[in-house]
Length: 192
Image (cartoon, rainbow, N blue to C red; front, side, top):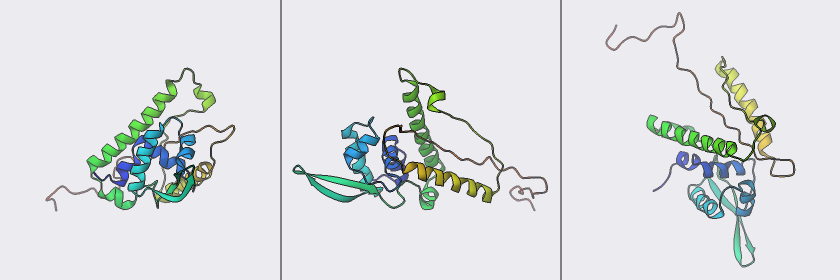
């Protein structure tokens, strides 16, 4: 069965693999394992195979290492985002299913965090909140661009001393449209 780009992206392990590659990184399986120590190597190989077959990852280099070939992976074109076409093709039920899969991954990550023997949400700067914003399309675009720039910069840092892997999850939803005073109300079917 061929998986759509959305189905490939929204599996928790595959999403983490894609996230580890953002920022132009080129990683071997061993390099990915350093970014994702919680993912067993056999699982990592299985998901890498699916991502490569689906075009979300590509092999950019092959090195001979002790009688075996070590592959170096990079992101495929627009691998970490759903295109306008991907979004337009999905039915409302498919969108809901993909969103629920996404939320299940977020819940799983949070459960792992709070299931540790000890954790300190204040020290670890763990947050979850909602903010209601009143923005024009242009103001929203400006906000999204500045957040995107900050995330791109932070994504370029790799594992290292003093660094801890952190996951930033964003969901941006408009509220249901309600006509303002003075807006023409839609006419009922058959009304003149």
